[in-house]
Length: 88
Image (tube, helix red, strand yellow):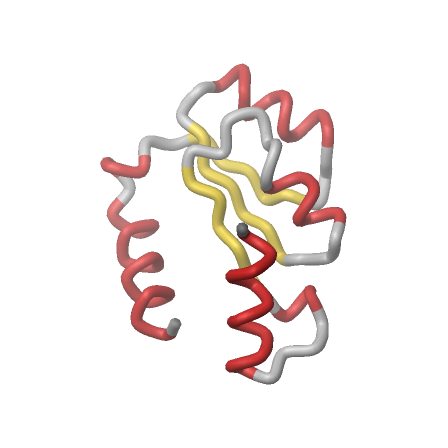
């Protein structure tokens, strides 16, 4: 499903290179989405509340910019999300 959404964004914005697409995985868990997408060349950021899960993401990939945090309490991320949603 995520690849279908990415393909739509790529075609609408005429984006050819995966590195030109920034994706934020909120509630990233153990990285089952963010790590494969980062390996495909996308610019990946992840926010995860559970410290253990965050450690697993960092151990599996250095391509994901992973941070610990509670999205509800992080106003900066909510502002970024609002900007992203308004762009799409």
